[in-house]
Image 1 (cartoon, one colour):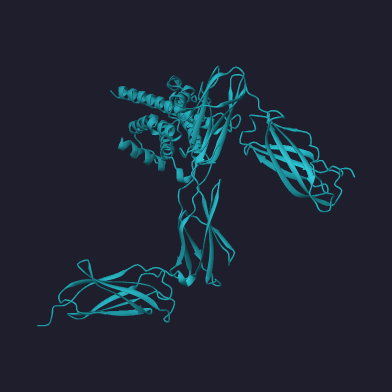
Image 2 (tube, chains in turn green, yellow):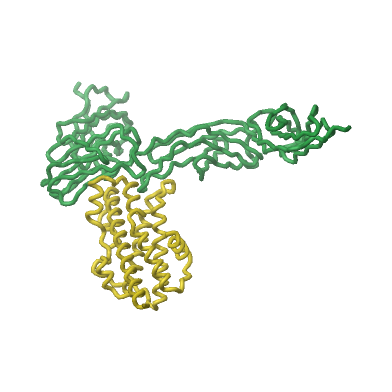
Amino acid sequence: LGEPFQLIPEILTVSIQSKLQQVNLQWTVPNLTHQELKMGFQIEISRMNASNIIWVEDYSTTVKRNQVLHWNWKSEIPLECVTHFIRIRAMVDDANYPPQNSWSNWSSWKEVSVQVSVAPNTLLIFPKSKLLEEGSNVTICLLYGQYLYNVSCMLQKEPIHGEQLDSHVSLIKLNNVVFHSHSGTNIYCQAMNATKTPFGTVLFVSKVLEEPKNFSCETQDFKTLKCSWEPGVDTALTWSQQDSQNYTLYESFSGRSELSDHRNSHNWKITEESQETYNFTLTTENNLRKRSVNIIFNLTHRVHLKAPHDVTLETVDAKKANMTWKMHSRGDNYILLCQVELQHETEVIHECNVSVHMSASYLFSDLEPDTEYKARVRCADANHFWKWSDWAQKAFSTPEAAP
Amino acid sequence: LALSLLFLSVARTTRRCPSSFPQLLSQLQSQANITGDTGSLLEPYIRLQNLNTPTLRAACAEFPVTFPSEDTLRALSKPRFLSTVQATLGRVLQQLSALAQRFPKTRAFPELEKTRGNVQGIRNNVFCIAQLLNHSLETPKPTQASSGASLSTATTPSIFQTKLDSCRFLWGYHGFMGSVGKVFQEWRDGSNRSRR
């Protein structure tokens, strides 16, 4: 039995997205014997001439009859500077098809090039500008006009050197690029016989987007959740290259998503039918990267009470004083933990914790007559401690002892 | 200097015109001198855009955007001079606004914002002085090189090219303001002599 019927892929289009330095390939498999088949494809890319293979990639997929298939490849060299060639072959890998032990023939080579004309006395640099992350690598290429010679290039104030690809193209490879300024790193070249100098490009090196830290949410009134986080470095760059990163909160139980107006906080409205448990994902994104952090909590475990109010101090006698205070709270059966402190001349002379309801009192005893004191109190949720409220305080003086 | 800055802000915000010609003239001259100083905008721009290397600085200075020259301005009648300054600074404001678009809020360029305010202040005062002299500020026909103050946008220039072109524009702008200051100085000297 001879080798089964060969299915040779046919390239439909090869297109280029210069800004992305990306080659897009579209092909089909004519004469498909089945409605659909699992197939493997092998794609080769060569540079400058068909024998200089620089990339081989295997790609598997299920192919339907007359289906147009897509694949793309990113070149580290700007596509304006050098011609590439691309071809493809196939092999059926499907149980419903006789086993194949060899690839089909190759499709014909297709040329991949950008039409660029270089005036004899000028020099073109690609990419024209580039946004990239600190630490990444980039290849810059120079296309020389035929009259140019002695080309020299600088990265800001430092000379940089390229490698000749051929008589009129050279490459400058920059590894592990460093953030230099929000206005970009200037790379510029001069040449003998050039009409207008300098020729240049700008690398916009962005700081790496950081994961938000210390992301947490709390409520003071069970109406609003105040979420906050530490944003890390602002990755905004000028010349419209990159705005400051944005921050989006997504709550999975409610399905609600909100873009924050601030870099480090957002107020989330607690609606009537709101649940008790919240599952928040905070996502930050710039043009180069996206990062997320997640927290799950019960609303009642994140109560940060407002400071006590209506604090009163009533001296009972020269040695006793009674302090009362009130709390904004959710109801009288709601138990609070309060910390009471007594200071004399800024020194804490008495401190204790008491469990109370919405209004409470505490009796200071063993005081010194005719003495100035300062009493202060703060509270927190007793069932699930999250944070103390702010302090509320009151100064008072004990009367002189009775004769 | 503080006095002139005070006038700058007053004139900028409201169009109430001082009624004294010498006061207006003195104010316009000091405004022109302030804005003619490259330290007010060009030098900060060069630093901010990392153009502070011998090659790039030379490239900036070598081909400044052309503005009406001092001789051209001096040869104009008073009405034509005021109209030329008003129109040119109108285009300058447009260019400065276009440049400001390229800076996100968190990367503000304060000197640029200050200059926009100052230029607006000068335009207000030019309006006032024209009113005092009963001159109408018609849109002047382009003088020998007055079309300056606009950047060539034949094809989409690269950012590197735009950086340089903006630098050349600012170089031309400061030169223009210096020339305007000198012409106003000559107006003042002329009016002082006629009062003797």
